[in-house]
Length: 118
Image (cartoon, rainbow, N blue to C red; front, side, top):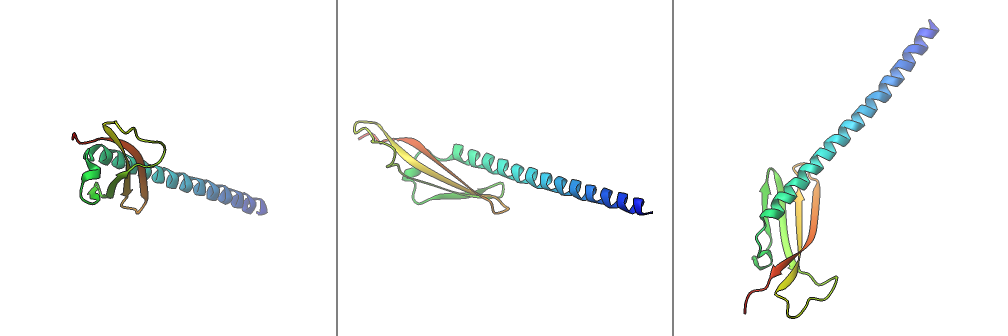
């Protein structure tokens, strides 16, 4: 009888550990899936941003597939000098995407903007 109780205790312990591993794997997969969806939405938004984002009045914002986003462009001052005769000006573009679950993804990049012809 004692052997049966010990065997049941071992089986219960193994089932509990397998269950916790399964739950952790499921949670990790769900988190990864949400992150990939958020990155895809950020990529979709960044492709659709207007070329003259720096000249837009205020920040751009909106919602795509339940993800709220906000984009802003400011002059880029770091990382090197801009050639004085260049037809291009670098912009620091900041894109923030908040998923329906509340996770925040911030994408920062530098984009070249053609200067207006004078």
